[in-house]
Length: 191
Image (cartoon, rainbow, N blue to C red; front, side, top):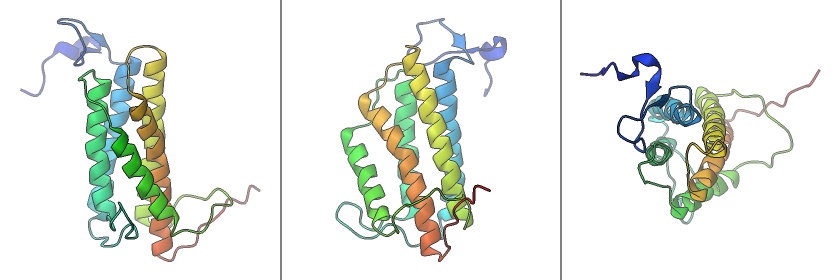
């Protein structure tokens, strides 16, 4: 059965809950789990939409031309580890994952002109989906930090660093998708 009726009163439980212990579905821990799930689900759409894009990051040491679809799937897998940690399952992101995400960002950034201004989201559909992923990653990071600050959860410094890098990854991927498609970045006019 997909339903248990246990949450009908607005409560839920997590891995770290003692037997019978319930928490509000609006708790910081539940909010952070929901934001991570929202990001991971949206990444499923980005992965499906990017499956036909055969090019990806430039081939460099440690990056090896990974496609957008591969990067998104890799990120989804990492997010499951973070969700498990936030739920109290004793899992955590490793320092190697942070190094890997930094190599991806650095590799993509080498292909792009320097940033001199903010850019209006859009261009290609894939770039726009990467931009939404960036904002959802920031939202998930804020929710996890709030849960840590409220002392509802404990996460590793690596998890916080990974979440912080994630929005940079999707920002640079949005720029790269437009760049490789010949789409010029548009700066806001502020008028």
